[in-house]
Image 1 (cartoon, rainbow, N blue to C red):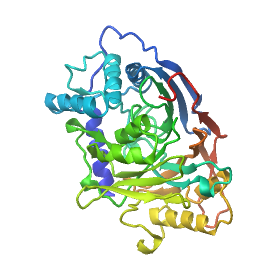
Image 2: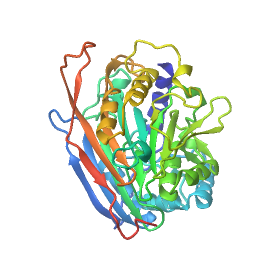
Image 3: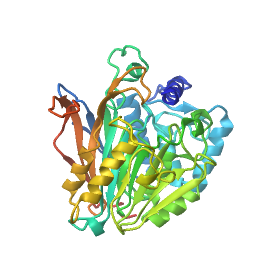
Image 4: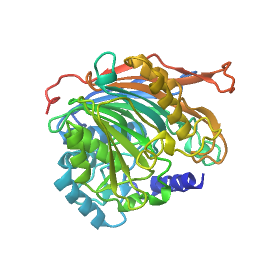
Length: 436
């Protein structure tokens, strides 16, 4: 548990360490907003708020729109670098390696009323909290798919609690739960690929389920076996790309898994602030899992050819390539190896091709519905699956059901049943810039 408490302490420091406020004369509103509306509201028996944001235009306009929404609707703050040289180096890095992000950073700077060339604030992220939900996922390539499409299913799990409650304190007045405000972000830039993603916590980067207009999908998951001691924690000295910016880079610039591999290996990537790994998939049915080695921090790419479902949960695939390599089973229902075993058993016992309903059934075997403290809480807290999704690479669509409430069950283990919203489907459209 201590490693997660250290992480949470970092978050608390970052949240107050040098933030920039509004300037007196409000910047001109961005013209890039097509839609910004709440499509699922929090109310009695409805836990999660979902905002659907659609942006189109130049990357600077998109960055400015995100900055305005982050400031106005989420009270997001910018992190101040420890020294101005970090800001200069980060800008030069983006100019060479990720010019799309640099243009968005210019837009964010405008939204906050600052000059990017003169500031020592980091405009490459828009944190309103930072955390990666734990999760499970399965990729079903077209070779085993009933409808002939490549798709993956996933769960996203975390505490039903505010940051204060995770720290063991009473919640502040009107303090939201940490992951009670989800974002579906759809962007159509003039440079780079359009994409749609679901996520939270950082409007710029943390879409942890993404598909772009080329049919490239990315799913990120926490890696519990990596170790917090190996992660980069001081955001005031950030350089290069952190993991979620690397995912954003892939979505913006890559059409295939091979292109994604080159993009990753050509960049400096840190695991910040919490250890994670991710899987990249394309419409060829091929995929790979990206991880960092905890021995030497080297990049590890684990290939999965188009020959069957690929299961991933919250442990290193590089270190534990098969079930036979797993530790002995433990009683914890939510243990990452136990969830993997259940999903692996499901796909191995299944006969015939897999439908999306089969994928959803598999995810129901790995729902988070326990009371526990291993995620960093000072005491047991309710951990739940906050959403469960089907991402179709060929359709460029995301179908997602969001957690609403618990109901009593007759399960022999006494765990509750979960009630989700009706499915909500979001799909990329063909727009002016969608195929660039």
